[in-house]
Length: 315
Image (cartoon, rainbow, N blue to C red):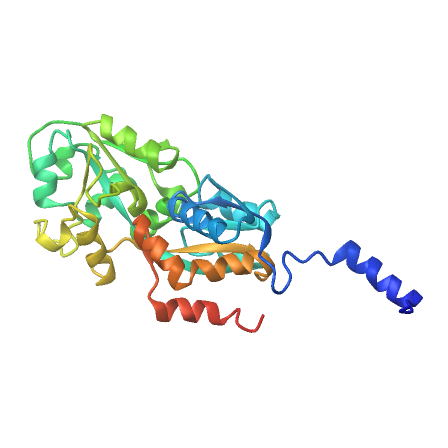
């Protein structure tokens, strides 16, 4: 009979208490991953989770939206395994031991109702950056007549996000400020701000790439994307007008659209175990196919994905 020493028993007890591997070599993955955060990333992460669970039937993944701020805070506090964050990491967050994994990129768009009283003028002329600053930062533009050439006499209703989110951070960043500097009526989440703008022919808001297009790639019914007059020639040029997802993607990839941003997964400490396996899937060719099928975010080029994964190759 094999002799078991007191030391061996001690090791077995310690491993039983503290060594709880999510999976063993040659076995399927198992365990639970909890994820919360950015609305922009949410649809893609849900699709990733579904695909990953089909591959590994013993895995459970709980995904909930709530804004990039919530995702970051939840990850830092250890309330979730992964936080979805659709903005650049804050140095203070990184100082708390966060690993920010770059996974996607996209953009934020100003939107108006398709019933906006001066829609034709807005779509023809576009809005210059200084005008958007006057609307969202300085509050010097309170009438649509001050934003575009016209004589409507109509007031301008400004909507922003009430939740801490990447869309607001990106939009404010483009205007040279931070989310807390944005003026307007606060509305929760992308679906909320889109529905509010739809119903208000005097309103203006902004929303994520993930939400302004239908699954088929057209601009969502009820809204119009406001052209940003980046070259300030007083005209919305063809390359500044986006009527479908493909034209928007083309402008983003070419670096011509001015309000783009990166998306991240936040993990407290270094990703390991089941979380690391999920991240590897996210950045794999299979994960990229999921992104392309869902169509709500833009996948990273293969070279960029490999560069991100290389930081975990030694693990």
